Amino acid sequence: MDYQVIVVGGGHAGLEAAFSSAHMGMKTLLISLNIKMMGNMPCNPSIGGSAKGIVVREIDALGGMMGLAADHHYLQMKMLNTGKGPGVQCLRAQQDKLEYPRYLQELASKTKNLTVKEGHVTGLIHNDNKVTGVILENGEKFTSEAVILSTGTYMESYIFRGHNKTSAGPDGQLPSIGLSQCLRDMGIETYRLKTGTPPRIKRDSIDFSKAQVEPGTPGHLAFSFMTKEFIPLEEQELCYLIYTNKTTHDIIREHLDETALYSGNIVGVGPRYCPSIESKIMTFKDKERHQLFLEPESRYTDSIYLQGFSTSMSEEVQELMVRSLPGFENAVFLKYAYAIEYDAIKTEEYKPTLELKKWPGLYIAGQICGTSGYEEAAGLGLLAGINASLKIQGKEPLILRRDQSYIGVMIDDLVTKGTEEPYRLLSSRAEYRLLLRHDNADLRLTEIGRQIGLIDDKRYEYFQSKKKNIEEVTKILESTYLGKRPEIEKYVVSLGFNELKGGILASELLKRPGVKYTEISKFIPELSKYDLDEQTIEEIEIIEKYEGYIVKQKRDMMNSIKLEELKIPSDVDYSNMNGLRLEAREKLNKVRPLTVGQASRVSGVNPSDVSMLILNIKKILNNHE
Image 1: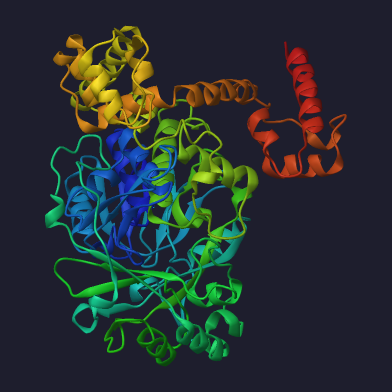
Image 2: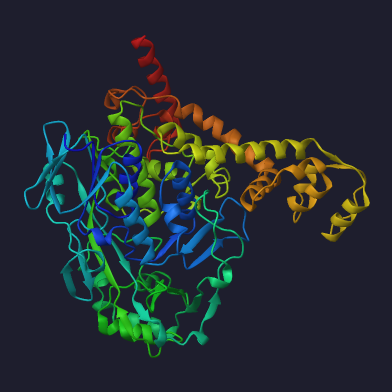
């Protein structure tokens, strides 16, 4: 074999796949259509957001690279949902569109075991039952033990503006032609998806006095648990908020026949949770306005990204639409918005390991899986690289449970429930979101990253020290009784509480709204030896303040784990299984779940089917014994 792992595509999924396999000791080849576009951000130049920000923390905790890249050269760092509970709080960073990919490209060039090559993959080398390499457009062939396809939105892609349809990839790059047909010839089912991007406007042509200022969040905020240097808030860029108006909506309605989306030119399904502006206007007809964020793309350009204004209207209509917005009366376009349609692989084609069911050795990651977003792509890439490497090493695959990570939730949703539109992670998709918090991603996943070989000694020692501090400080808080002392009474009353009738456990006092660890630690001499950073203090406060809710979710989690541990034999025949309804048989045969827990989440499988499945599985296992 020329290589052990070949990764096709240098986007967020491809880079994480290549980094993880290389770091696990695999001789890895990354093939990109354009090396200079690796790590590119063709849509929003940001990392993180609702649920997505937690995914980036999880990637970092497992030993991935996205968090480290996002912490370099960012324009603005912001904590979202601060008015809500810790289960939905997450980071979002406005990135420098030039610096972010530059950092990743330099990292790729220096990574041991990783070779980067520019090329256009048009086919796969395979025998009757295994994929063993790739074929380039120029006829070159490279063999490997595993191939990971992370083609993003490039496969057979078309750009749409109005009635104009152009064969092109994102940002006007060349599309990937030929690979889709190769996959279909191999019996792999593909389907069309659609996404889009807003226009970019010249900064000096915007009147920002008509917009609301949106600054970053104070404090030492970072995606990577290893980041120790932070950009001061006063040095961060400002974002802004404006709203559409009646004139904007009228223009869109008058020109609906000129948009690719409503003219019938686009057949792919677009993202439900990131729709075009024309979709918003037509879907939410009662809304008088929609919010738009004005976001800088780089310190080195004068480009402003108009978030929330994705459209496939013609360039002429886009100018009318944009100039109807407050502050955009004299807007100068740097880039017009467009929609892009591309091929993806049906979710029933791949396993929770991201390996194709029909073709051992072939893995997929990113938007080819049917997802949307840089963060989802990176999470899938990381797991694809890990599982390809583990299989080559002869080890068990890594399948993260829904109670362990948002990445686990995403993959389980894809392979169990499927998707007909670009899948986007949301906090509402996670039933254990209080366990899957922004602050505790390292406690959830770093041990796993260490076991598979992605966490080095230095990082692991730091993690163990932090974990030990949390355990010891928590134990002190839960065993220290604070007596009735004047300084404690003064602090309690200052927060609006009545005076304490007697003493109180430190942990119970910390549970009260507004009570801070930094204040009550002053009353406990044993805590003075612990030099804790902001992140660790935050984690301790959440553990104590939400103890009751966390304990309840952990109890629910333990019940579900019992079903996850009950594995289903790979050769089980659902068609002739006693007691299963016809719909359940059809759905289970299609999904081929690995465990009873996964089977219970398949659409069309009800609790009585699960009970019958458990009985049948136990009979099968007893017969095998």
